[in-house]
Length: 334
Length: 293
Image (tube, rainbow over all chains, first blue to last red; front, side, top):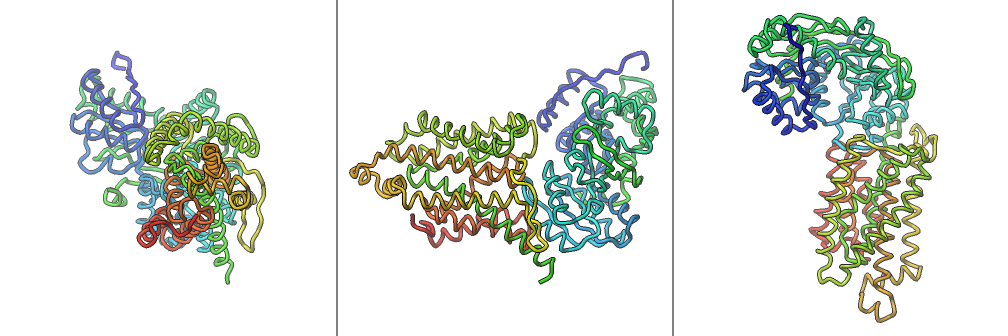
């Protein structure tokens, strides 16, 4: 690329904000990197965000959904993953399409990610003519939802949006199923491979949101090759998290070639800002807005079968694209 | 009553009973050790977590059934309790104000165990649970109760009853109560005080281990459960009266039902600290607890 290989210097930030900040400083000052990338946690990304913006160092974030990472005024940070409040918006649009006027119950953990998702959903629900009949938040570390599952069942919702932190997601899901809620009524805001395995065969028919999945209609030839190689290496199909990490070098490549230099941070920043390309694995557009937020999109998949912890099948049920600021995302989640 | 109302009522009852029984069991373990040895075990939550994580390891890594894992953990737990008593606890039996010394020592244990869990289990998973020992569900009207939870509740209550009988009618129990009340007088009457201390520490610790296993059978949990259980057990012991198994049972059940009911009328978040407010209120009026040992 421009006569030089694209080199990545890998530093373990241990998913700790202070480590990430120290690593960013080291990569900037000692290694004189052209750009930063890499965190898969909003907390870590936010710690690096301040440094990147202050030092005018392009920062391409593959996986971090907290909205404020691309708040108005952001110049050097670009985020590949749609923001979490937008996921809530997309869910409301999905339910609006399949059952206008539906009654919806929310059961979610109070982790920042889940709060942001639900904030987006609560904002959009009345605009999509949806009726929220139960809204239950669980503190982190919760281990049981027997009473709340009964409350939700008693509210007779058409759909239940379930988003527990970690394995508590399985607890919520199973307790709802135990009480007679049908899998078809359960919608998970997002699903990665290990979660689908955790939900298991009894969740066949339930829906989850995602940004990349083996069951997508739009997986390209390169996407299929990526899935096959990942599966061979790890014994399971990749999720959107791995997909975003896979497409990140391609984004850098295109932006550097467009900038015409591998040494000028400002030119790279401008090239990223003007980028208009597609994900190699799915063909989904990659375009960033004035704040570095991506033109957002989401798939909703239905679980068709789950084969232990090895493989699963899903069917694409819905696809939506939207402008990041179609809802007041930066006011909804501070 | 509509099916929906019955559903909520039954779910509240079942949650209150199971949580209450496990709370009571763990608090009974804590209260026996404190009441007899005067050892406020700050690491009781970590003991609880250790047992549940060890059982999880036996099932997840070695493919044991949950029943086999429970037996294995109880055997190892008994040995560990004896080892701890032999290497650490007995050295402070005759120390003046040993309750303070014990508190500091067990706080140290807590820190060490917390660090070990963070370095190991926290990296493997964020939440743990054991496969059920008893499969299937039993319907109570419209409410499906997992048989495994019924089993957990039954075992917890049975152990509490056995504990009560042991302390009330068995010679060991009488000796233990004698040491509770007056160590010197018990010694003059021929009670081997140090042996009773040892037995009490081991018995109390094994009961906490059992509580951890039963909790892991009924619920999923993460590493924060140690802190929650530690605070809860101390609160139950203080309100119920140190050394009182009946107090542990009554207050444990009260806490379990409080948590279940508050989670309906307020929120699950409020439920997690609601009973601690009740503890402060009761201590204002009955600083020595509601039940005498």
